[in-house]
Structure formats: structure tokens, C-alpha cells
Image (cartoon, rainbow, N blue to C red; front, side, top):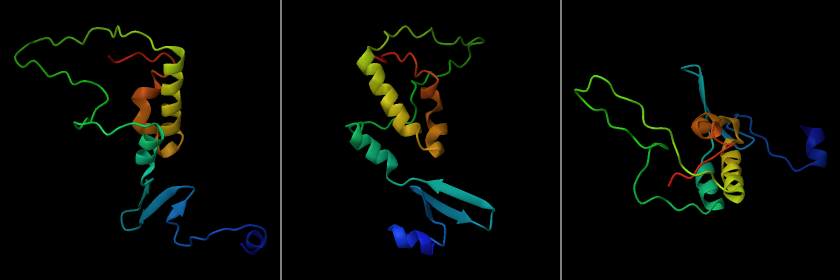
Amino acid sequence: MNALKENYEISEDWDGEKYIGLTIDWDYENGEVHLSMPGYVEKAFKHFQHDQPKRRQDSPYPWNPPKYGQKTQYAEAEDESPQLGKEEKKFIQRVIGHVTAPHTMQWQCEPYTTQRSHPAKPW
């Protein structure tokens, strides 16, 4: 550490609570570690000028209510939304790349990454 301090301005965290932008919460009693990035999503919203929705939305896909009493419930029809243009596609790729860049966030974006190469308009 002394050699680094001679040539660089550095900070030390001997409790291991911060590392490359991650906040680390050590739970020694249960043998777990919890990683988080406080404020990351809010900064991404601001960066991409995304306004807070008026109504809460917990799922990226519309919910199909079950039809009780019906023996067979068919899957919804194939999505026939028009393909995005070149600029719209680049924007979607930039947003997904920004959010999935930290490996800790990738699992939350998995539904989007499978459709990244040919995104379609949802409207």
C-alpha cells in the first residue's frame, strides 16, 4: 500500500464495505455476502432521461390473467410488433448495455438481453 500511496491518490477500506462501485454487506452469521449498488438505477434513469412512470409497473411484460374453469389455456399469439429502426435499436442496446455492464445487475435484465439483436416496438 505504501508504494501505491507514493505515486497515487488512493483510499483504503479495511472493513471491505466498498469495492469498484459495489457496496458489500458481510453477513458472517449466515455465511452470506450481499452486494448492492445504491443509486445506480436512479442515475441510469437520469442519464437516459427516463421519467418515473405514473403507475407502478413490476413486470416488463403484460400479465395474462388465468381463465378459471377453462380446461385449456393457450399461450398468447406471437408478437407481431414492428421492428425498431436503426437509431431506436442502438438506443435500446445502449440502455441494456449500461444496465447489464455491472455483472451483479445482469440477472435482472435477462428477459431483455435475449431480444437485444432484434428489438420490437411494444406499442
